[in-house]
Amino acid sequence: MKKFKKAFSFFTALVLVIAMIAGCTPSQQGQGGQGTAQPGDTTQPAAERRDHIVLAQTSDVGTFNPFLTGTMTETRVLYNIYDALIRAHVVTGEMVPYIAESFTVSDDGLVFTFNIRQGVTFHNGDSLDAHDIYENYLLWRVSANHVNLIEDLDTVTVLDDYTIEFRLSQPNALFLLFLSDAGIIHARVFNEDPVAFAAMPVGTGPYRVVAHHVGTRIELERHEGYFLPVPISTAEIRIVPDANVLAVALEMGEIDFSDNIAMASVSVLEGVDRLTMHSLEGIQINFVTFNVEKPPFDDVRVRQAVAYALNRQTIVDIAREGLAFPTEIAFLPGMPFEPQNHRTYGYNPQRARELLAEAGFPDGITIDEPFITFQTLARDAEVIQNQLSEVGINASIEIMEINTFFSRYGTGDFQIAVSGWNSFHSHPDFYMRLYRSDNIGAANGARFNNPVFDDLATQAIRTMDSAEAARLYDELYTLIMEEMPIAPFLITGFVMAYDNDLVVENPNSKVNRIMHMSWR
Image (cartoon, rainbow, N blue to C red):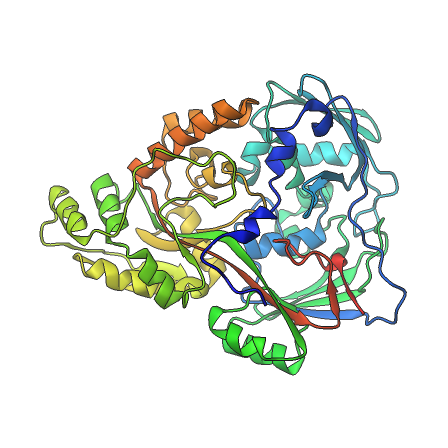
């Protein structure tokens, strides 16, 4: 397995879809033309293959409702259940039609017309047409998870049973990218009983949910009406919270694939001949989140004090055994529009104590509520707890089941937390969601509400000028590094392990759909 290095070599290959949308010529973007590429190469050799796969992850999904999902774990499972109109190809970044058979974009970049693939069926056998897409649009309008998608969307019109038009009020450089994240559900079934739907969803994706044994496993079955080949007919997603148990199960052949490998298990699994190991570097930012609505973290000086108290390299060395990278900013190397002029927060415990004194806490602070986090970030939180205590900030830690954590996190039922964020897309706007006020209750756990920030973030996705976008993102990062609603401390990645006989079509993807796996 390729080891983590002190450089982000993987980012030279990482897909930057925004370059295709915002930085290319109109002919490269598809404006005035068509997107007609096929959804990935799923052709497999006609060799003898197994028909079942067992995958493992460390936490369960809390819901199959895409309007409520808040974790990467949930999103990755849902990618197997729902298709979108289009998806960004994991290697080329090209916008590939899925439910849509093709699409056109007007020369002014305001009108997107999608021709719906005929013969697409939902998991219950119902046929899909353009009216179903419109019903999804009505749900997007009231979903916190789809705010960016509908922000500049003026009208949606069903032109006929298999043609639908999206008209923007003004250009939006990321509209197609936002649309590629919007999984299409059976809206009529959802509207009949949203609670039941959240437990047993109905989509059009390559797999349907057969059973969900909460906390134990999710059983999936190939959607026989799917329009592309799906090599493996049944799949079990096993929930294995304990890293040691997961490693042993992989070693013994009880699990075929997992991309939730704990750092402590890497050296052991590298010695297992039957396994292939692969790493994806630098795709998740971990950070301390402050609830800016609650004292003492409603005072920016206290938030800045925490930022100065973090010895990020020590957190990497102890909590991540060196297999991560320190950072002070919610920005991944390789993303476009790298900010230049922001404030920095190098390790400075003396400055942290001075800021606490300025905020009225010369003798330090004891936080009333526990420092909340979930199991995979528990070691990060423990190291941070010790570092904060050295400058006089004292708090206990409460380690939660991940879905319980995000429920508390989303409602603001905490003072301080350790969390993380990663996106399938490498563009700074997907990290701006951590700060936008319309994402409070979703990605914006800090409950940061700054109209100036919101306006700048909106301008940044509306401009088609790269130099202007760079200026706006620089201004955005300058603002948030001053306000410090979250304090980033490291960038980490994923390590996956899988059976040597398993073909994983795109191992460098952040989302390995089961339909893109097959047995040799």
